[in-house]
Length: 576
Image (cartoon, rainbow, N blue to C red; front, side, top):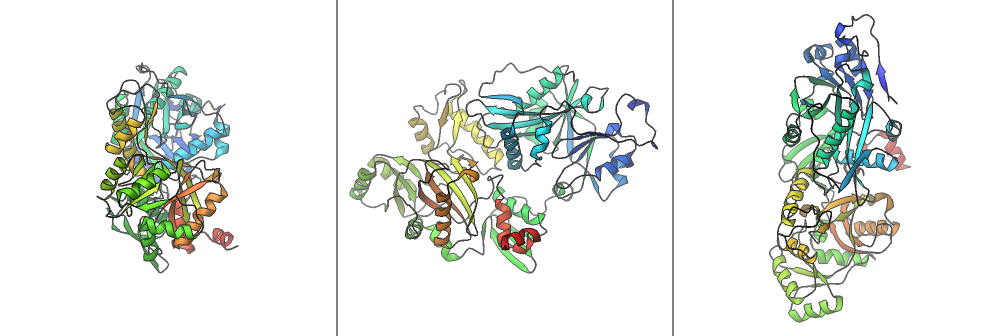
């Protein structure tokens, strides 16, 4: 089955002898946009006209353009030269890896769940997703091949890659093929997912008779280029041309003033610019920026804006005050005392069995110790917490999973399970080495915002699992290496917005109203997202809006700040 392959004829243009064996003017629909094969177009004006046919919210690419200056001259105000390199793998010389892989499997796209997972991964990587019905039609395509990597234990899709068979697309006499949209779930804890997807696609296409496999990569993506060169790819002197649109804007105008912004600020700045809202980055390192639209100007620090009052901030800042405020609103809270004399601590421990120690003020999980069961552990944890705040809270340990709910304008926008950092044994590496590798992957996936500290808390978690940091973990064994699920210490986040229980939503909104705060991240300990039981942990006045894909967190934040920037139809629905 050949899928959505267009061939347009241009009788006025002579077809060179080199093209007599391939179909002319070949275009392949890939869902997120179209590939226009420049080597099949003899008339640059026809290729430029075809690029003008790009659909809304799509990203078309003219590839294998050997004379880009000629094509750009056809529409200099509409087209631009893509700053990517093309690399080629000689499949005749390619040698498959001898290393086995049992942690995940690679197969073709199969069902609606796969499609949803692929689009979720695309969203997490800020890539253009395709309509679900396209992937339904593309599952058995001979032209466009979608592969997915699937976790062997959970059956979750953790990576995806798309291949295009050039012979099926346009009878390519060179028997070429290409790789597109390689993406790995940033939450994946398995190493080598991207490399394995590249290899499986290469092997699949080689079996079909392809001689080469090409791919396009941004010129400054050193990590990816290093991987491709290790696999045997070599640079090819050809070019790609794209149409100027909002998706491609940063490639042809740059990103003035956003250098140094972290992902939590950048996601908001990107959404504001998409709507035509003025952005002035005040302090990139601190995450401060000013948004201006229609005579209204608001200073923000990531998701904290001038709409949040100083009183609301002070309530969130002091965990004991937060707890009292939400308890009065009818929210379920765990027992809590302020660290003081040893006798009081011993009595609290005896009553609850296990406790959490945390600074009365602080963020990003700093100074928190979890699962303490002896008075000696508590006293050591109190001293550790005092490095972050003179006042220390001792709280009843509530078993369960960590749930973060994002409430904006007193409405739930996103709900996500936060899971502590964990590694998977390979039977060869020490746990310390696995943590270091996982930490590098988390840092790369989050712009340096997430990594796993090799500290006393990590050592304690590993010991609780029955190992030391220098032990070699058995192959495929999962080891939790942190007790807390904070993203800054390597935790991962998994969207559950569609399944969260109404009682949890109601409790999160109660927290927001009790504090009277327009944007807040509410943390609960829960048994399961679809069950009503919970215990309030804390409220964050500056929650990170990144990592909640596919939920529109940045969109709702900008709606709050500038309601008139919403499309008129959406405003009417909201008012209705």
